[in-house]
Every structure is written in structure tokens, then in C-alpha cells.
Image (cartoon, rainbow, N blue to C red; front, side, top):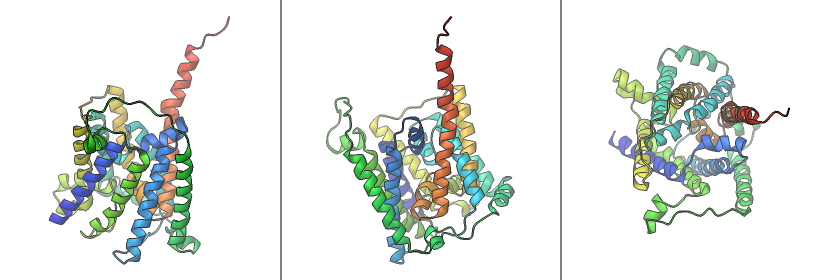
Length: 353
């Protein structure tokens, strides 16, 4: 238990710290791909996936642990990921983003987190469990991409790494407009950690390493898996309601660590403050959280569990989920941002006599 608590909290705190300081927000990244054609955060995600994929499959090759991709509940993954994508736009952050933004003092994120945990628990062991099982009955036997097409995993990983390296090379060659910042108040390491703006690619590299380390740390406690947010979030509520100690696992301390790491980073950088949302934002946050819990529970993972981890394991579930997650964010972005903007623009146009 001590090992579980210590390693889970440390890994989570590192992740929360890095995500808060690097502003690693996949919700904003997916949204900006559509609204402003800015793909940098998506490219950053690809870096984290590539690093984790190489790291984890190296550990598997060294027989540190075994991994089975299992089957693919195709309908559940498609429907759940799309709903999850809509939910993160309404909530203002994905599952992990909600945890780390709650550490910054955003009350709206606390509201979204409550809805997310509630429905995720209902999907795992509550009234929504029969629905979850019914939708997941439709499944495809093979979830591994390599197994499905009859090649070695390392061939797919190598091709993926080469493609990502080429994309990053082209991106880094583009000229960037230097944005003037305020005069630094800190120096040395304190300036780098708590004041300097982190490049998303550097942030993604660190996250990829943390995601790799999460596997052996988690496996050492009997939990076969890497980073995960949805099930541990549900487990917290399940434990609080039932008192069953079996719900406490390495993932629970991981998500608690994300909150603590973000809280520390926000405090040290002067970014922590309680921010109370208006009524409309609070309602959107709650609705978004409820949709996140349902979608992630149904899809078998959130933007981290599916979008970062299962993609790195080169599974159909991960990549299909990521695609429909992005599609969901684009759909919600149209109705939340684009359509109202168009209507407002039309309303202000002067109609000629």
C-alpha cells in the first residue's frame, strides 16, 4: 500500500505540475485545430504518443510486463468518444485538464469534475452499467493494429515515429513571431519552472516520459496499465459511497497527485485563485462533466486513457477514439463558438435601404 500511495502520488504530481506549467490542454488544442487552424497542440500530443510507444514497447520487449490489446467495442468507442468530445468543450477542459484546472482554483472545473466522477461511477457499477454492457456487446475480436494487418508492432511504431519526426521538423522550421513578455521577476531555475512560457513540444516530451514510467510503477502494484483518469475518478466516488477498499488502487493516487501537482505549480507561479463562474458557465460545466463521464465510460477511456495511452499501444481503440473525440470537439465548437459568432455578425450588419 505504501508503494502504491507514494509512486502514484509522485507520478500524478509530476504530470499535474508539467501539464499546468506547460498549459497542456487537449481541449484547447483540438478546438484550435478547427477554429484557428493551429495544430501545434495536436503535434505535441503526437510527440507524447511516440515517446510513450517506444518506451513502453521496449519495456514489453524486455519482459518487464505483458500487454494484451483485447477486443474492440467499436460502437461504444465511436459513440462514447464523440460524446466525450462534445463534453470537454462545454466543460472547458478534458478529464485530466479538469483535474489540473481544479488545482488552479477554477470552481467551474470542480463542478465539471463532480459531474464527470458521478456519471463515470454510474457507468462502472451504477444504474448505467446495464446500458454500458449492452452497447459494448458489439465488438471486434482484434484490437491490435499490428495483429490485424499481420505485421510486427515495431514496424508500425517506427513508421509512426518517422512521420512525427518529419512533422515536427517542418513545424520547427516555420518562422515564429516573438511575443514580448513582462520583465522576469524570478531568476535561474525558479524562472524556468514557474515563470517562463514552456514550449508545447518540450512539455509533450516530458509527458511522454512520465506516461512511460507510469506503466512499470503501476504494474508493480498489480495494476496492469499506464496513465488513466476515468476509472480512477470513478473509483474515488465508489470508495466514498461503499467504503470498499478494493476501489483504492494506483490510479486513484495518480489522479489525486495530478490535483496536488497542479495546485503546487499554480501557487508557485502565482496563478492560483478561486474563480467563480457565472450561471451559464456553471451549467455548461456540469453538463460537460456529465457528458465526459458518460462518454469516457462508454469509450473505455478519455483523452489520456484512449487519446494518449491506447494510441501509444497502437490499438484501433486508441486511434478511432482520438478521431471521434476530435470530431466531437469540432461539432461542439461550431455550435458554441462559430454559429453564435456568425449570428452576431449578421445582426450587426447594416441592411441597405
